[in-house]
Image 1 (tube, rainbow, N blue to C red):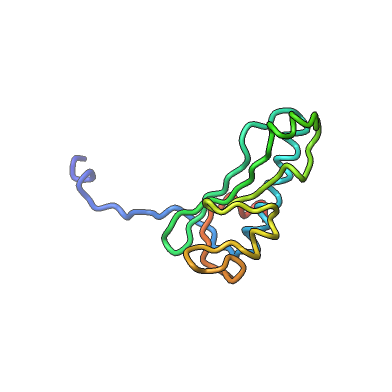
Image 2: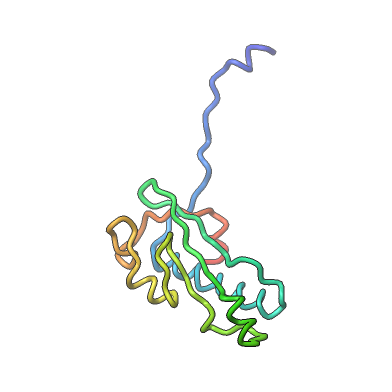
Amino acid sequence: MVWDFFVKKEKTLPEVLDISSIQLLSILKKAILLVKEDVNTKSYTLGPEIMFDYNNTVHFIGIKYAKKRSKALEQKDFCKEFVSVYLDKQEYKCPEELYENADIRGIMLKDITSGIMVSPEYGEIL
């Protein structure tokens, strides 16, 4: 049936999960547990990064672990002092500091109660 090819098909939008900044912070904190596990099993490569959309703009929130500094100080296991978190290019010492001080295009992260769109897989973490 050649005609089936030309029939307009409905576009299905990918499913997303609409969350608050508190929920985003919760996902970030759980990602730190993954970093801890990776560091302790000596398989750490790069910190987890979470991509999300807010007001039709893509943003990234994630974790950095100072692996070189840890190695230089002969720290074999995970240590919170080597963890930092970021939102786009803004870097913070801990998730709580990020939550209180980060802004997304002039809107404080802590003031966002909804509209942060993430992949539905993060729903399992929440």
